[in-house]
Amino acid sequence: MLLVLTGSSCSGKTTLARALGDRVAGVVIHDHDEIGVPEDADTQWRNRTTEQWIVRALEYQARGLDVLLTGQSPLGEILASPSAPQLDGIAVCLVRVADEERRRRLERRDDGRWPPAAVDAFVGWSDWHLGHAADPRYRPEVIIDGSWPEMAWGRWSAWTKEDPRWDTYVLDTTRRSIVESVDDLERWVMAQRAGQLALSKGWACTGA
Image 1 (cartoon, rainbow, N blue to C red):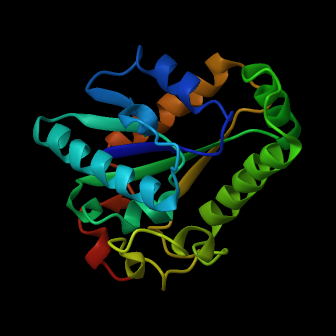
Image 2 (cartoon, one colour):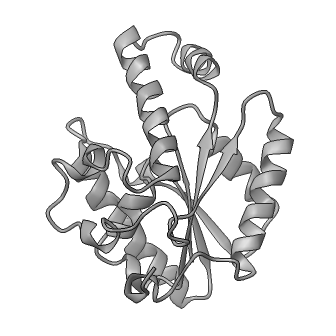
């Protein structure tokens, strides 16, 4: 199974994943960018790298292990990745924080090196993530335009928000302690591993 923690920068994904690693067995934790981020990283790079991680997750799956992957790929990108239907299961959690808190975190983490336009872009990307999590028809061109040609967007492009397979758990870390947020994340992970999956194997061939 592939468990994905997604969201814009400074929402707390990496912190939560590291803390969760001390609590659950049989789950291997990785970050999308640990493969290496080129200077010209773009949407196609993110698509190709996501596919690389799905292939790795399939290798872990063959050994009876699940993968928790942190990154910025939303549900639609995961489902459109070439190898995604081979996974035993897919579950996505959107880690979110209030806009002003994200701005403060960016300033603290990078010593205020981000110009206002860049910070606004991070906030806009976060807002888009939330809309996408709720509805597959919310501005899909944001991830489809300029994407890697191998992506199979048609797998879900006709879905509506009522389709039970369109399922992203939203975890808001605003004004919550790390312990509280990790507790929520652990409950979500355990539920997915217990079989409460909207996207179990065969989802790509199942009608709404």
